Amino acid sequence: MNKKEKVKQSQQRWVLIVVILSFVLSVFMSFVTSMFVESAGLFVALMTLIVLVLIGIITDVIGTAVTSADEQPFIAMASKKIAGAKQALRLIRMAEKVSSLLNDVVGDIVGIISGSAGAVIAVSLTSLGLRSAVASMLTTAFTSAFMIGGKAYGKGIAIENSARIVLWVGRMMAVFEGKKKSRRKSGSSRKTAKK
Image (cartoon, rainbow, N blue to C red; front, side, top):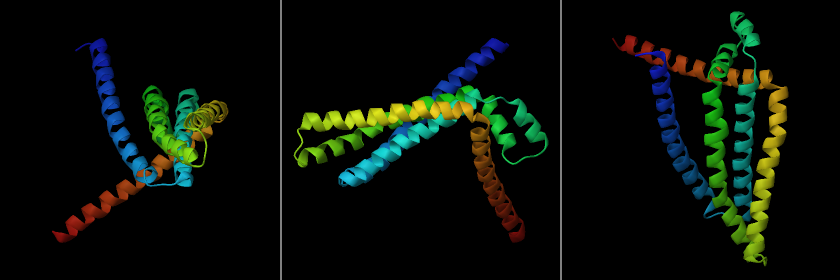
């Protein structure tokens, strides 16, 4: 198998992973959102909408930071065994996939699901005396302005502080990976103790 065929297979595999991941995340986030929102009042629906939009903004910031970060400082940090540098380097080397997942997949899912929270807010505003058309318009305008404005502001922060953001994410990953390793070690030590 030549290099082009390998690249093509890798891209096809990634597309399939993205489709499956999008489906699973959509189902999970829709379920969680509907649990909070359907029986909720205006305040809970509004807070859920804000949380969803913030998730969209934060993942967009991380995705942008990963694509704009330079790997050279992280190579030096990884050689000095600075916590999170190895994980940050891994993120930068997979920048295209990380950006696709965080900016596109999560961003689009959040955008779609925030509509259900917005619908509850619109209904609540209608019950307070606003016309349904006005309530829907205000909810959509608020969501769009918050999401677009937040992402636009976040992109500037992401580009200016890309190294810091990527290292922070790398450190979070290192903590998570450390916990997984300690669980494996404790599990294997229990097995050997039983023997």
